[in-house]
Length: 98
Image (cartoon, rainbow, N blue to C red; front, side, top):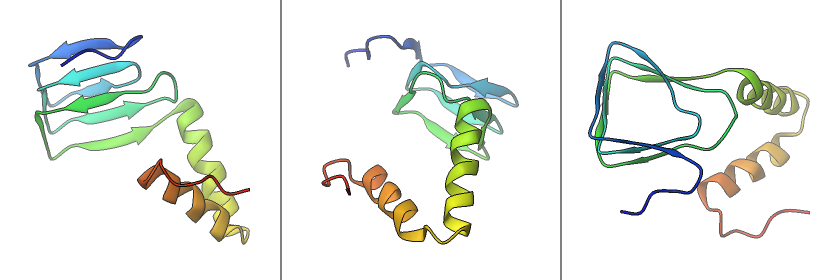
């Protein structure tokens, strides 16, 4: 598999009982057991192969601010706007709403 430009490639590593910053990393055939994956909203990340067991994901920085804003918008009656964003996440080939 070809690596994604701009991302650091990590291949075949077994992570266990640790906090792993995932910003800007292309994880190939890595396993995560009892870890906390942390995304801060920097560069994207990518996972291929491997596996995840008893692992959670947390957001910090810009990523957390984005999730907080979406949550506030949802709570303020902008439910359909937020749902449209999630529809695009689930299917990027959809036409973006106006």
